[in-house]
Amino acid sequence: MVYTRGSKEDYDRWANVTGDDGWSWNQLIPYMKKNERFTTPSNETTRKFSPAVHGFNGINTVSLQGFPTVIDSRVIQTTTELAEFPFNLDMNSGYQLGIGWEQQTVKNGSRSSSATSYLAPQFVSRPNLHVLLHARVTRALQTNSNNTFRTVEFVEDLGGEKFTLTAGKEVILSAGSIGTPNILLHSGIGNSSTLSSLGIEPVHNLPSVGQNLTDHALIYLSFLVNSSGTWEDAERNATLAAEQLAQWNTTRTGPLIDSPTPQIGWLRVPDNSSIFKQFPDPAAGPNTAHYELIFASGLFGVPPPTGNFISIVPAVVSPASRGSLTLQSNDSLSAPLIDPNILGSEIDLFIMREALKSAFRFASAPAWQNFVISPFGVNSTDSDDELDEFIRENGGSVFHPSGTAKMSPKGANWGVVDPDLRVKGLDGLRVVDLSVAPFIPAAHTQFAAYMIGERASDLIKEAWGQL
Ligand SMILES: Cc1cc2nc3c(=O)[nH]c(=O)nc-3n(C[C@H](O)[C@H](O)[C@H](O)COP(=O)(O)OP(=O)(O)OC[C@H]3O[C@@H](n4cnc5c(N)ncnc54)[C@H](O)[C@@H]3O)c2cc1C
Image 1 (cartoon, protein in one colour):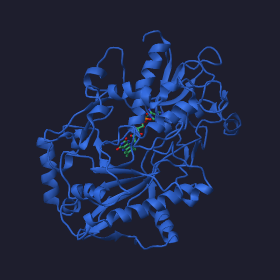
Image 2 (cartoon, protein in one colour; image 1 turned 90 degrees about the horizontal axis):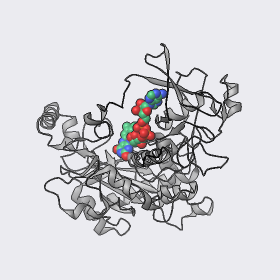
Image 3 (cartoon, rainbow, N blue to C red; image 1 turned 180 degrees about the horizontal axis):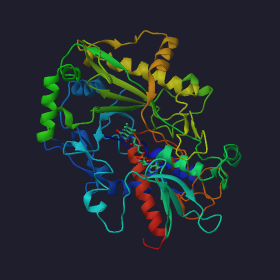
Image 4 (cartoon, helix red, strand yellow; image 1 turned 135 degrees about the vertical axis):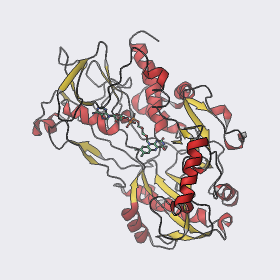
């Protein structure tokens, strides 16, 4: 439900690297507005966002926090106390740096998603749209000639009969950053020699398929606090939890109407950090975050038997590390091998360590006096080695896999799709999902997925003379 766009520089980098200005921030603005229906809770004023940068008539609802938490005023007060954490009225303006109110894809207290927006009942009932439930695509197949892939093979029961469908115009593959390269590889589209060694007939040599897997790493960092009113109250009290759920079920009010993160920060390590002597800056530009701080009034995961907690969760948002997705067998229903390689690059570990220290500094501002007791499970005085151990023991993913079928300029000998999202060198097959992102944006990634979908719909209409 976290709705963040990233920086203008993130998308301008897409445009630069693909040679297609249509992927730049300014060119994507109409799609941002087409996607977004910004709504404000009735008690809200403009003090939490900038109306100028939002769409109010789109399809997917974006809103602001609707229920207060015990951290709200303290987070905002800290932005007036520590200069390194400036307030940013609207992190979705294209300039993301600073601390501000989170925007969330929530409509009237419930999650707004592609299922409730683009596939809402009035759309899913269109006569020219057929949704097959429980169907799993196994491969794209050649249709007529070598270079044309307009046929899709799928099963309805795992291991059951295989069916095929052939599209009149083209096939749009939208299986996500894991599913899409998995299907392409089983179709013989990938690194030909690797596919041969697995017993898959190589059909089209595209070594970049499954490479460039990029994700955001996080650490669930919590602090013991001297306060009630955090999630743990309901987690340890079944009656209170049942009351909150009943309130949400009956009136869509109460603490369960929001995403868990009322504020977010986007920050950079200092430009003169020693690490930049060894590594280039992985961010898209000087106004793009290296790391994020995610604020929450509770501990993520199962809480210990006693104590109340808040979280300041650091995440590395412009990572240099790249993982990969490969196959373990030629069985198109077997799971792929995923190597996330999170924090695999030394600079990502450095940034995560600095982000942890930044979270400690944030929690030591005067605003948190007599509230924060101590970090939980780690000490702010720990050495770099101890922090690295804490990171390695507790690191995880923000669940933003991207880039495994990345775009490259037309004619490039690397990449998987052209800037119009057609698979390089093939006819009839287009990829429309986050796998085409050449770089992961410094943002939670649903927005980028929506932008790819919105622009793709125009590219497809244009290709078929319907724009
Ligand atoms: C737990 C979690 C929390 C997240 N929270 C946020 C958040 O708060 N904010 C945010 O911005 N982003 C969030 N994200 C990230 C965001 O959901 C993704 O970046 C986004 O959904 C990617 O869109 P996509 O279209 O590329 O892929 P997906 O949304 O993954 O869509 C791919 C679809 O293809 C289907 N599929 C895959 N393989 C096959 C196959 N072989 N046959 C048929 N169908 C197939 C899948 O079932 C899926 O429905 C979260 C992700 C996760 C997992």
